[in-house]
Image (cartoon, rainbow over all chains, first blue to last red):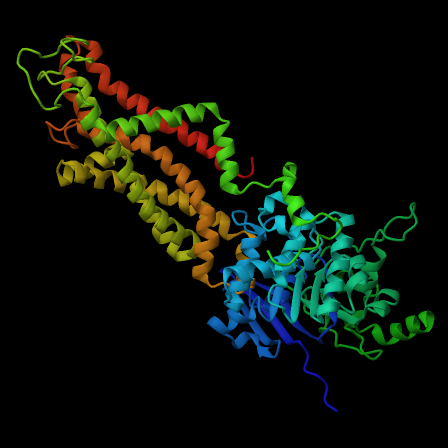
Length: 333
Length: 303
């Protein structure tokens, strides 16, 4: 029996932005895999390296970025691709949805022109076919009066419709892997949930793999199969979404969960994590979260904590885990 | 269309849907045209520009006299003298005819340098803006060197060094307009380059050339075009200035700046007639300016 090749595989990814005065260590040894038809959600606060990781999968990083490690997507070694092969991968096998639907669509072209352009670039079909495909895509993402919207400019659409058009554009060449960089952050709460449900539905229908980056735990709970929590460029905890949200092992994940507004009694203060994220130019030597951690012990600052696998499919990088894991597992079942 | 399109959430067929005009979506150029048509000032001054251009183009048919025919006895006559509607100049030539013919030279000197400068400066600006880094520094600092000279002085210096004449004058004006044009294009490109849709285009597999051609040019052409249209009036003024200083067109060619320069000595004899070339320059440049203002407002999507 052979296991199917994962759709995306990242091994020990390091990304550094080398500047004149200092070097920013944005991603420091990230590894994960995504299987076809599964959704991985990368959770983390601003500057934790989640978007950089996502962009590395498509090599959409500026030239100053030094990328090390292995990145395989759709069976290809992304870091070795050059020129046309790379352009064929982008938008063909792997495509991406951006956070700001306002700025991610070119204001001087109609929706139809922008989707048609992508379709023609990858399939080489004629204008009429591309147009028909664009219409089909707008209907797939449930845009009402799709035919008329093809002639609309981005500024004539609402935020939700624009994000749907963005999704349609990303789906135009039947990608196997869809990358979504906080696609719902810029939307209203009611529209957010619509777009999430749509994405989840389309992802299931088309059997795509998806990597979804967000800082919103509620969004992660809605869409993910597995969750990877990032802090200071490292994955500190990963595992199936239900288990992580129910019984977080890493103190950072626990802190994140405690600091949400959802489901808290009205009069209770929200437990914020004290302190602020570390300076990515000068990372602490050991665990990056240790300075803010409530369960800090002596060994924390000595070395980067090793990965523990307390349950099958679950990982947490914290030296306090062995003892703590037993406690929580006993409590939660 | 052979297949029927089903609209989710509505039972209307596409044909009925199109018959409902209240939600009609205008294309970009349609809405620009709509806004222009409802801007009375721009319509008025646009018509003026059109009339000025037409009168220059049709000068041979409109001019009542030969603009080069001199007359010893008919020098510096006031308006209306023996059929000379706008009087005669210091050599007895018909002012109206000379103004019409002079418009050809002045408009040419106004428009041609701007077109060349837009192409050259625009291209340099887009390259500088898109490449960034050292290329940007190289191009933009070179432009700054030219910027250091006042534009009038630079035009005078260049055409003075190369000698007078219309083509040298145009070349001088082109060189004067390249730096500001380049700066406008560079600024617009730098702004566009940082926007997400450039990265989004890259994420859909577009190559650098496609991105520059489609997404950068598409967004930069608007501001560049608007700036160019405002440069036309500056160019007409500068060209007139060059001719006035004897560095542009050579006599006896009819040109507004040159006419102003030669009629200057007779300002006390027939003041109104002597001021006419200046009036022509003033009206033309203010019309171009106001039209470019109107275009700026009409073409701005975000307003």
